[in-house]
Amino acid sequence: MSTLREVLEKHVHDGPVPGAVGLVARDGRAEVLAVGGAGTDDGTPMARDSVFRIASLTKPVTAAAVMTLVEDGRIALDDPVAPWLPELAEPVVVRTPDAPADDVVPASRPITLSDLLTSRAGYGFPSDFSLPAVRLLFDELKQGSPQPRGVLPPDAWMDTLSRIPLLSQPGREWLYNTCSDILGVLVARVAGQPLPEFFAERIFAPLGMNDTGFAVPAEKLGRFTGLFRPGADGGVELVDAPAGQWSAMPDFPSGAGGLVSTADDLYAFARMLLGEGTLEGRRLLTPASVRQMTTDHLTPAQREASGLFTEGQGWGFGGSVDVDTTAPWNVPGRYGWVGGTGTTAHIVPATGTAAILLTQLEMTGPTPPLPMRDFWQYAADA
Image 1 (cartoon, rainbow, N blue to C red):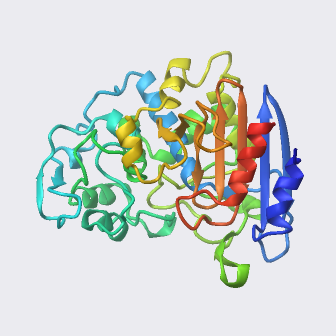
Image 2 (image 1 turned 60 degrees about the vertical axis):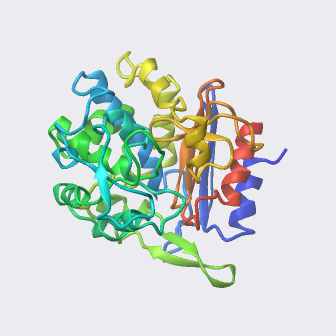
C-alpha cells in the first residue's frame, strides 16, 4: 500500500500540481502532510496552515448554516421560500429544456427549502450547458468558476434571477450549483444579517475555523496559495494570485463556492459532522440534522438523469453521498464534495473517517482528476 507522501508527491514532484495538503483521519487521529509549493512568486513552501480557495466545498457549510436555522425554528424544510425570497414567489418554467427562455409555463407548485437543499428547485446546471435557460445562469448571474469581484450584490442578483426561468418543475430534477447560491441569500434574509457575519458567528467561531471566510485578510495573505489551471505542454497557468480576487470581501458572498479555508478548519467541520466536535458540551447540529445532510435524497431516476454522477453517487444537503461501490474508492454512505479549484473533503460516518485534499490546480471538467482519485483510494484503504 502506498503512503500518503507517495500519493501526494506522485502528482506534485512528478506531475503538474504545484502543491498539496492532504489529511486523513479516523477516530480523531489525523495524518497530515504538506508537499510542494504554495505557487507564489517568492517560492513559499506549502504548509499545513496554507489557505486555499475551496470552491464547492462551500456547499456543505452553507447547508449546515441552513440547518442551524431549521433547528432554531425560524424556517422548516417544507416551507415555501417565497416569504423570504419574494423574487421566487411566481416562478415559471421553460416549456421544454431546449425552449427559448421566454417560452414558459407556470411552476406547478412553490419552491420549498427542501427543494433548494437537495438542488431540485429547478435552477442549476444539467449535463448540457448550452440550453438557453442555462446560458442565462452563466451570462447574467456569473455562475461557474468562482469570480468574487464579478458578481452582483445579493438583492440585485436575486432580481436578475427572478427573470430567469426554471429549467424543470420544482422537485423534479437535480441540477447543480445555483441552489446553493440561493440558499446563501436565504440564510442572510432569514437571519437578518449578512452571510459572512452569520457564518462567522454560527459556524466558524464555534468550531474554531479561524482561517475560513469569504476573503483573506492582509495579515494572512502570506499563507494564501496561488490558483492555477492546466496549461500547454503539461505546465500550469496562473489564474489568481494571493493579492487577487479573494483579498477583499466580495459584493456577493457565494454560498455555492466563495469560501477560503485550510485543511485543519475543514477537519473541524468534518469532526462536527462526525459527532466528535462539541460546543460547551452540545453539538452544533443535532444527529438528526446531520443524518438529513448526509443521506441521499435523490430517486434512482434523478441520479441517472443528473449527468454529473457516473460513479455511484446521490446527493444529500450540499454534498454527494456514495450509494454503491461502482468506483473502488466509494464507501457506502461517504458524504462530501469536490471543489473546482482542486479541492475535496469527505467523511464516512460509519467508520468515523475524514479525508481532505487541498490543491491549487483547477479541475477541467466534472470528472474528478487523477490526484483526487488516488487520494480517495488511499483514504479508503487506510
